[in-house]
Image 1 (cartoon, rainbow, N blue to C red):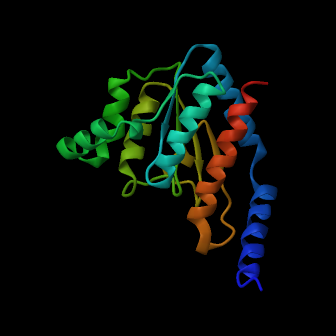
Image 2: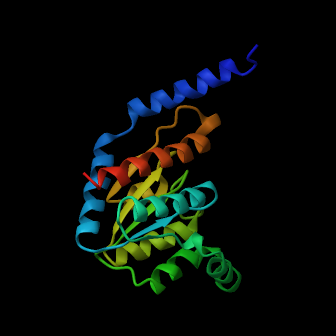
Length: 189
Protein backbone atom coordinates (compact mmCIF):
# COMPACT_ATOMS: atom_id res chain seq x y z
CA UNK A 1 0.00 0.00 0.00
CA UNK A 2 1.47 3.35 -1.05
CA UNK A 3 0.56 5.97 1.55
CA UNK A 4 2.00 8.81 -0.52
CA UNK A 5 0.63 7.94 -3.96
CA UNK A 6 -1.73 10.93 -4.06
CA UNK A 7 1.04 13.34 -3.02
CA UNK A 8 3.47 11.87 -5.55
CA UNK A 9 0.93 12.18 -8.33
CA UNK A 10 0.09 15.78 -7.33
CA UNK A 11 3.76 16.83 -7.20
CA UNK A 12 4.54 15.29 -10.57
CA UNK A 13 1.40 16.79 -12.10
CA UNK A 14 2.55 20.23 -10.88
CA UNK A 15 5.92 19.58 -12.55
CA UNK A 16 4.16 18.78 -15.82
CA UNK A 17 2.14 22.01 -15.55
CA UNK A 18 5.34 24.01 -15.04
CA UNK A 19 6.88 22.35 -18.09
CA UNK A 20 3.93 23.38 -20.24
CA UNK A 21 3.84 26.97 -18.96
CA UNK A 22 7.52 27.92 -18.83
CA UNK A 23 8.59 30.65 -21.25
CA UNK A 24 10.76 28.98 -23.87
CA UNK A 25 11.66 32.31 -25.48
CA UNK A 26 13.41 33.39 -22.29
CA UNK A 27 15.35 30.11 -22.23
CA UNK A 28 16.36 30.77 -25.84
CA UNK A 29 17.50 34.28 -24.82
CA UNK A 30 19.67 32.77 -22.08
CA UNK A 31 21.26 30.36 -24.55
CA UNK A 32 22.07 33.14 -27.02
CA UNK A 33 23.61 35.33 -24.32
CA UNK A 34 25.69 32.48 -22.89
CA UNK A 35 26.96 31.50 -26.34
CA UNK A 36 27.98 35.13 -26.93
CA UNK A 37 29.74 35.28 -23.55
CA UNK A 38 31.60 32.06 -24.32
CA UNK A 39 32.59 33.18 -27.83
CA UNK A 40 34.02 36.50 -26.62
CA UNK A 41 35.98 34.85 -23.78
CA UNK A 42 33.78 36.26 -21.05
CA UNK A 43 33.03 34.70 -17.70
CA UNK A 44 29.86 33.59 -15.93
CA UNK A 45 29.27 34.38 -12.26
CA UNK A 46 26.46 32.41 -10.58
CA UNK A 47 24.78 33.81 -7.48
CA UNK A 48 22.45 31.97 -5.13
CA UNK A 49 21.73 31.46 -1.43
CA UNK A 50 20.46 28.45 0.49
CA UNK A 51 19.54 25.60 -1.84
CA UNK A 52 20.18 27.93 -4.76
CA UNK A 53 23.80 28.30 -3.59
CA UNK A 54 24.19 24.53 -3.75
CA UNK A 55 22.69 24.63 -7.24
CA UNK A 56 25.12 27.41 -8.18
CA UNK A 57 28.06 25.25 -7.14
CA UNK A 58 26.82 22.29 -9.17
CA UNK A 59 26.12 24.54 -12.16
CA UNK A 60 29.66 25.98 -11.99
CA UNK A 61 31.00 22.47 -12.44
CA UNK A 62 28.73 21.78 -15.40
CA UNK A 63 29.31 25.08 -17.20
CA UNK A 64 33.08 24.68 -16.80
CA UNK A 65 33.54 20.95 -17.41
CA UNK A 66 30.81 20.27 -19.95
CA UNK A 67 30.13 23.71 -21.42
CA UNK A 68 33.74 24.95 -21.54
CA UNK A 69 32.69 28.32 -20.09
CA UNK A 70 34.78 30.01 -17.39
CA UNK A 71 32.37 30.08 -14.45
CA UNK A 72 32.50 30.93 -10.74
CA UNK A 73 30.22 31.18 -7.68
CA UNK A 74 31.16 33.29 -4.65
CA UNK A 75 29.57 30.80 -2.29
CA UNK A 76 32.13 28.17 -3.31
CA UNK A 77 34.72 30.04 -1.22
CA UNK A 78 33.39 29.67 2.32
CA UNK A 79 36.36 31.48 3.87
CA UNK A 80 35.94 34.60 1.75
CA UNK A 81 32.15 34.74 1.95
CA UNK A 82 32.10 34.34 5.73
CA UNK A 83 34.91 36.86 6.21
CA UNK A 84 33.05 39.40 4.07
CA UNK A 85 29.82 38.69 5.96
CA UNK A 86 31.55 39.08 9.30
CA UNK A 87 33.47 42.23 8.43
CA UNK A 88 31.08 44.07 6.12
CA UNK A 89 27.65 42.43 6.36
CA UNK A 90 25.72 40.00 4.22
CA UNK A 91 24.25 42.69 1.97
CA UNK A 92 27.63 43.49 0.37
CA UNK A 93 29.15 40.00 0.08
CA UNK A 94 28.34 39.37 -3.58
CA UNK A 95 28.95 42.90 -4.86
CA UNK A 96 32.38 43.10 -3.21
CA UNK A 97 33.25 39.65 -4.57
CA UNK A 98 32.27 40.83 -8.07
CA UNK A 99 34.41 43.95 -7.67
CA UNK A 100 37.42 41.81 -6.79
CA UNK A 101 36.65 39.63 -9.83
CA UNK A 102 36.70 42.74 -12.07
CA UNK A 103 33.40 41.88 -13.70
CA UNK A 104 32.89 43.66 -17.01
CA UNK A 105 30.91 44.00 -20.22
CA UNK A 106 32.05 40.62 -21.59
CA UNK A 107 30.79 38.78 -18.51
CA UNK A 108 27.40 37.64 -17.24
CA UNK A 109 25.73 37.12 -13.88
CA UNK A 110 23.32 34.21 -13.53
CA UNK A 111 21.06 34.31 -10.47
CA UNK A 112 19.29 31.31 -9.00
CA UNK A 113 16.66 32.56 -6.55
CA UNK A 114 13.21 31.59 -5.39
CA UNK A 115 11.94 35.17 -5.09
CA UNK A 116 14.45 37.20 -7.09
CA UNK A 117 15.12 39.80 -4.38
CA UNK A 118 13.49 43.10 -3.53
CA UNK A 119 14.58 46.35 -1.92
CA UNK A 120 14.12 44.63 1.47
CA UNK A 121 15.01 40.98 0.80
CA UNK A 122 18.07 39.28 -0.68
CA UNK A 123 19.95 42.57 -0.77
CA UNK A 124 23.18 40.66 -1.42
CA UNK A 125 21.72 39.66 -4.79
CA UNK A 126 20.05 43.02 -5.50
CA UNK A 127 23.26 44.96 -4.78
CA UNK A 128 25.29 42.60 -6.98
CA UNK A 129 22.84 43.05 -9.84
CA UNK A 130 22.92 46.83 -9.53
CA UNK A 131 26.71 46.68 -9.76
CA UNK A 132 26.55 44.26 -12.70
CA UNK A 133 24.27 46.69 -14.53
CA UNK A 134 26.72 49.53 -13.84
CA UNK A 135 29.48 47.41 -15.40
CA UNK A 136 27.30 46.59 -18.43
CA UNK A 137 27.48 42.84 -17.94
CA UNK A 138 24.59 40.63 -18.98
CA UNK A 139 22.11 39.55 -16.30
CA UNK A 140 20.36 36.17 -16.45
CA UNK A 141 18.09 34.67 -13.85
CA UNK A 142 16.06 31.60 -12.99
CA UNK A 143 13.51 32.66 -10.39
CA UNK A 144 9.94 32.10 -9.24
CA UNK A 145 7.12 34.04 -7.57
CA UNK A 146 6.90 37.36 -9.45
CA UNK A 147 10.64 37.33 -10.21
CA UNK A 148 11.42 40.27 -7.93
CA UNK A 149 14.34 42.52 -8.76
CA UNK A 150 15.84 39.85 -11.03
CA UNK A 151 12.82 39.96 -13.31
CA UNK A 152 13.03 43.75 -13.54
CA UNK A 153 16.71 43.95 -14.49
CA UNK A 154 17.54 40.71 -16.31
CA UNK A 155 18.40 40.54 -19.98
CA UNK A 156 16.81 37.09 -19.85
CA UNK A 157 14.69 35.80 -16.97
CA UNK A 158 13.29 32.29 -16.80
CA UNK A 159 10.33 32.60 -14.47
CA UNK A 160 9.27 29.30 -12.90
CA UNK A 161 5.46 29.45 -12.75
CA UNK A 162 3.81 29.17 -9.34
CA UNK A 163 1.43 26.24 -9.50
CA UNK A 164 0.77 26.05 -5.77
CA UNK A 165 1.85 28.29 -2.89
CA UNK A 166 2.71 25.17 -0.87
CA UNK A 167 5.62 24.15 -3.09
CA UNK A 168 7.14 27.32 -4.53
CA UNK A 169 10.63 26.65 -3.17
CA UNK A 170 10.98 22.97 -4.15
CA UNK A 171 9.69 23.63 -7.64
CA UNK A 172 11.85 26.75 -8.09
CA UNK A 173 15.03 25.03 -6.93
CA UNK A 174 14.26 21.80 -8.78
CA UNK A 175 13.66 23.69 -12.01
CA UNK A 176 16.91 25.62 -11.60
CA UNK A 177 18.61 22.27 -12.17
CA UNK A 178 16.53 21.47 -15.23
CA UNK A 179 17.19 24.89 -16.75
CA UNK A 180 20.95 25.03 -16.13
CA UNK A 181 21.42 21.51 -17.50
CA UNK A 182 19.48 22.56 -20.59
CA UNK A 183 21.63 25.72 -20.96
CA UNK A 184 24.93 23.89 -20.50
CA UNK A 185 24.11 21.40 -23.21
CA UNK A 186 22.54 23.99 -25.52
CA UNK A 187 25.69 26.15 -25.65
CA UNK A 188 27.49 23.15 -27.15
CA UNK A 189 25.12 23.05 -30.13
